[in-house]
Length: 348
Ligand code: NAD
Ligand code: WQD
Image (cartoon, rainbow, N blue to C red; front, side, top):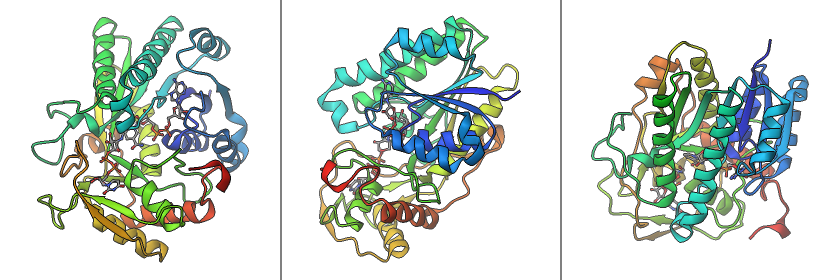
């Protein structure tokens, strides 16, 4: 019998790509999303891309903090596992509005965990982040590194990781996988789904993409005096389809006995600088990205990339795509959808 998977935040960037891989993998998939930072068009397109498997997707527009509504979703379907993406993720906004982030991310997660426990669903995959490594003293970052939070967003990830460890300590029936994503970029190779941030993008590649389609005049490069190959910050960019496949690997792991509460990095293990990423995008798109060099962005680390051995060994998963494919697919999405899922008059 097919597995039933609940995906919170499944209309979002990483969620929509993961839902597609789940459907194609034969999973029945129920999405809960309040559409605060997503469009239901993404799920319509996922359904189309999934072909015959599209019928196995159900969507509920529900806020995770609405416990009665979430109870109804669990009453309708017996879930084998939950993949929990739903949360707010803008670092700068979290500094301005910490209570919004604590309310949404923490209360949303606690409500979800309570409802899961009440319905006997004790298998969880959670979206954590490389942000929990703070400014790492060395690279690559292994899962055993000391953790820290530089902002309220990162603190929600740290807290939720701790909450998950405590829950497992209190009840060993739980199986929990905490996935620490590095820098997800790119889009599905069809160019039909991708990242569509609201307002001014915070992250590098959505910004580059909007410069390429003429929505913004230039990219500001934050920091040119780091001790890196070209002075700009180095990150571990990972293709969103590789990341989505990492969740399927995590689900397979959940079916093993006694896995406890385990943490895995999802990255490529390779560091790429801002200027290298821009050059790769220019090559893929044939577009020139005008640059304005600026000071470092407060709170930014210099170099962050993943140790990938644990995920390779224990999840039998590793990233397949490199930065050229990431940029090719990002451009394919951007050129086909210059205004994302919206139209020119409903963006800023
Ligand atoms: P996203 O904003 O595209 O997706 C998150 C989804 O959750 C959105 O569709 C939003 O509408 C929904 N949501 C938010 N709060 C909700 C609530 N209370 N109830 C129901 N739905 C809610 O973000 P993403 O990039 O797809 O990220 C998914 C997860 O991965 C997030 O938890 C994020 O913190 C984490 N993460 C993202 C990155 C990244 O760079 N994109 C890196 C590391 C970790
Ligand atoms: C990458 C590099 C910037 C924008 C953030 C979150 C982290 C995680 C992933 C969720 C850095 C430079 C960026 C720009 C630039 N998200 N940059 N100009 O900072 O590694 O991580 O997203 O968990 O928590 O902090 O990603 O894409 O913002 O930046 O020069 O306009 O690009 O300085 O070196 P970051 P990013």
